[in-house]
Amino acid sequence: MSATILDGKALARQIRQRLREQVAQWVQRHGVRPCLAAVLVGEDPASHVYVGKKQQACAQVGLESRLIELPQHTSPSQLLECLDELNADPGVHGILVQLPLPEQLNPDEVFERMDPRKDVDGFHPENVGRLVQGRPRFVPCTPGGIRALLDHYGISTQGRHVVVLGRSPIVGKPLANLLLARGPQGDATVTVCHSRSAHLTQLAKQADILVAAVGRPRFVGPDMVRPGAVVIDVGITRTQQGLVGDVDFPAVAQVASYITPVPGGVGPLTVAMLLQNTFQAAQALVQDGNS
Ligand code: NAP
Image: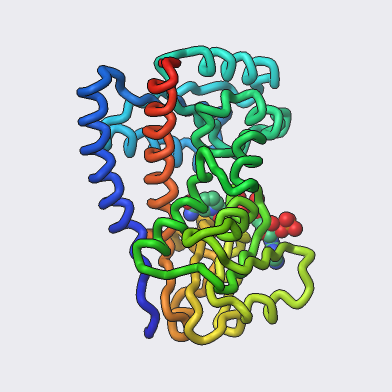
């Protein structure tokens, strides 16, 4: 293997440690403990695992967390009512609605109802708009985690061609906007591909930095990677062999310069960014006298 591993787990640990100190000092000064409310609708086992991990991570850095569990058959008005309560609660600084939602619930409607100042996932239209304008309030957690990883390893995006496989509102689109922004944190030339893209392999092979977020195990093989490219694997699929990424790791590691593992790459950073955004939300709300 020739590629250097981008160790997201180790970096997430460092971020959490720094955050724990910052949170402790801030709580002492303001007498308020930042609180993340997680709304979990239905019985999806993976969602229960993810929310549990996020709550555990909150506890590790000294953030309070609340869990609101709603049944599978929750109606749109019930969920919106729950959000209204959390929006109005001065003890709640960040709100997370775990996806996917049951089919009767429209995620767009749900995120639109959230107080954008508490929307720590960055999915409210106002926060999406701010990101597109290059003045984000909350950077969505997975793109923020990728940015943190690139920064940590000194991998610049300025003037480089980033090819993102996947155009979801959670990963592909916000990442593209983040890296397209003016300035040292962005300045990339970004190509976004999806299931209707023609000549995918040729496009991927042009990338200096290739990001795979399609949700298809081992979708990216060495034929799609330019020798020396940086490869970021966002994909997580549960298989009988455990968690599998979108990249054929052993084969691609032979050609890439840097590569993220799955697990232990982007995943832990996504959680670390959620904690950071929650702390940031609490700071802003307290400063504005809303908490
Ligand atoms: P998603 O909403 O299902 O989006 C997948 C994207 O991939 C879509 O844009 C889709 O195109 C595209 N795609 C699917 N098949 C393709 C193909 N054959 N060729 C080219 N593009 C294709 O998924 P997501 O929420 O972005 O998540 C993607 C993966 O990342 C999943 O495995 C998920 O579990 C993982 N994930 C990981 C983290 C983390 O923290 N590590 C966070 C979020 C998600 P269309 O738009 O045309 O359908």
